[in-house]
Length: 242
Image 1 (cartoon, rainbow, N blue to C red):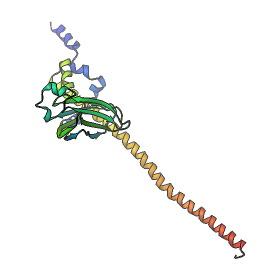
Image 2 (image 1 turned 180 degrees about the horizontal axis):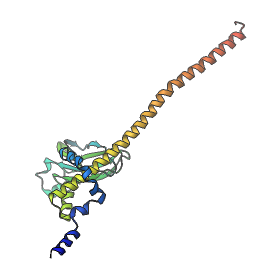
Image 3 (image 1 turned 60 degrees about the vertical axis):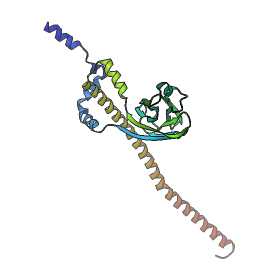
Image 4 (image 1 turned 60 degrees about the horizontal axis):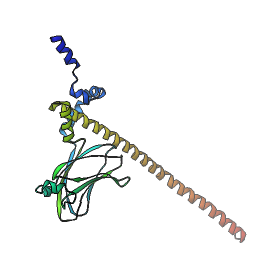
């Protein structure tokens, strides 16, 4: 009765334990203050772009390698169109989103937006800056407004699927989200630390060059002056002027 129920209770694996490693679970109490900060300051930014003609509009993101990004978009001009027409690549109102690595100048992700509102999952392929570009698939006679919001981490769709798969309640899902956001912030902090180290080394090289370049100039002037004096002295001696 009670003993077998207690044994089954201990052997039942909690859904949250399947998604968190023992190290992450042990470090969670130390991360609670930062988790509270994440609740107050969410990592998302929103804006809108006006696309005209066949030109692309881009904005720059700078994140560590393998950073998960979610692009939320809304295109009011596509809201009243038939869904089959919007999904058709030949649609005059369809748009294409691409992620371009600035180091190689190559697109690492490309997708045609098939609805007036949705989300797109992206991932950086290197630590160099990336361009997120939106471009109409056909030339537009009038500007198209696109509302975009870029958020770090996985999107709502991913967490909904995770919750359904592991039978999580709302509190467990929020803990997983905050743990992922914390890992994202710690990774970004390490990335910024590496950038600061590189900048510091570059500043030291510039400072060293700024110190030795005037010394080299003075040495050249001194050597030039010595040779000029010797040549003048030899000239005066040869001409019996000294």
